[in-house]
Length: 432
Ligand code: TYF
Ligand code: FE
Image: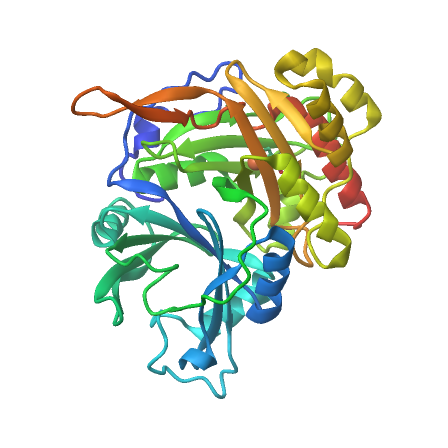
């Protein structure tokens, strides 16, 4: 039974794990309200200045907006980074002894005690998964009516300069992570009430947007039933322990998606009875509960993105997980064939990229080490190649462009063996 009580979409569909091979993809377009795409991701941290600068440098994402004491926000410091459609924000509470709800506080529901509690239990972690919706008020009401745990009832944010406004609302998705629904006419960076920053150096390593946002939970089916129950997302793909192959630790995973399949959200659970502890169990312990495990950042040129990121790994940027062994690269041609050129094979190995293929396209992927102190949240950098399809205007059927089908090339099932071995090797060095 989902957290919603009454029967959920998932239960009506008879939700159970069947594994990658037996899963039949089908899009019932069952969203309960219009949800378009990821809007932004907000990390809560103990010091926003240091954290945003590290991400800005390591990922090539300039500062585009802020809210802090310089804009008369005496409650929290918050900084917004952007590269194309990828928006990250970093927020930290000021001293509770000096804090006041001043004029310049854009998010009036922000609670410093709650923020300290959050960073105390999770360390550096994602608090909010922003979703762009038609109407954040409807999204909240429908979600709560279908069992979602409400956190922020609809709140209007006004932008004095442009006279535009926004509505945001929040519900729990898993653990202390919320969906932040965002709607309205405001077109500035991030949210109304933040001050735009226009003098940052214009840099980008080519990161475009979030391809998928992954959560770890104790109970996969229960978590997926809860989420699909309140927003209507449908199942898009799944993997069970057997799909992971002969490694020492396991997980089950289900990917859920919105109607447009522009929002892909895998959820993982640990499996038990293997020689080593599941990496998902390690996360659940170290994060003190469920939470966001990784964000897959999409680039159109993974070679350029990775050269830039790797150039900064040893100087304050992000480090990557240990490379797959030489045999992995030797065996790659047999799996991937001439989907890659000889030059691309060379660069893939040079940069330590993993490659997989499904019946439709090719996936290039690589994983960072954990972003902060704890072995919890990390990033994946991906490029999907192929699966282009025509976009037709609904009314006339006229072809107006092309787009890439969601999840093109899969989620790296063919790399699970190499990847999880690398994660196990890494976790062995941590004694966790
Ligand atoms: O998002 C995915 O499903 C892939 C595979 O700890 C994956 O990136 C799954 C679990 C994990 C790392 C990668
Ligand atoms: Fe992933």
